[in-house]
Amino acid sequence: MPETIRVLLVDDQKLIREGLQTLMELQPDIDVVGEAENGLEALAKYEELTPNVILMDIRMPEMDGVTATREIITRWPGALVIILTTFDDDQYVFEGLRAGAQGYMLKDVSGSEIAAAIRTVAAGGTLIEPSVARKVVAEFARLTPAVPPPDDELIDELSEREAEILGLMANGLTNKEIAQQLFLAEGTVKNYVSNVLRKLDARDRTQAILKAQELGIV
Image (cartoon, rainbow, N blue to C red; front, side):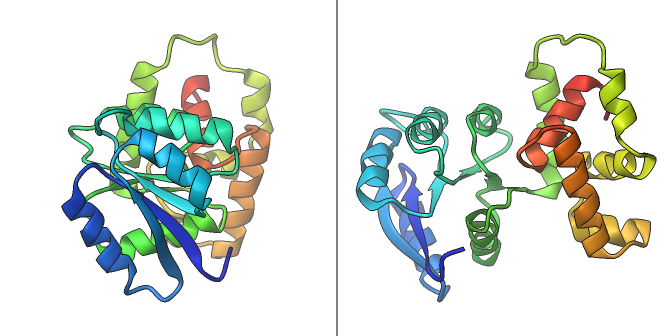
């Protein structure tokens, strides 16, 4: 993770951009290097500024956040995007995650939570708020076309403990919360999560949960 995380703010409301910038200015390791008011402008700004992380709104004129996320990650596979949205209104968020966004947050979170999310994603992690993770998985399941019966061979590769941890991941628990619930060390849980990602051939927790949902494992 870079010492200073360069952030691009993308939102069609100037007031929100200004508010986010003010909050991020309080963080010594985060630097807002640019703003964009729609997806088209975000593409140009990303090419110009090459930020480490993008905070991306969904509903915007000219080009929405889902399309912009897909375009940016297609052109620059290393791009990191956190979607900021209102869950009840922005159903496009699910397609945004499919497009490759690494984070999903509600707009009513605190500045410190947004800063923490930026650091997590910049360090190579993913973040979906636990309070809505189950809803996200359920919505993906609803939108996903019918799939063949579960792959029994794949399911057998997961140990009983790994399957248990996968279920808790699907319920939105963090590694720390899983460790507390199962009376395990957080480092041990992290190792189990890594094994689950490897066995499901998933790049991150979100993809692992979605794949497990499609296979009928959770």
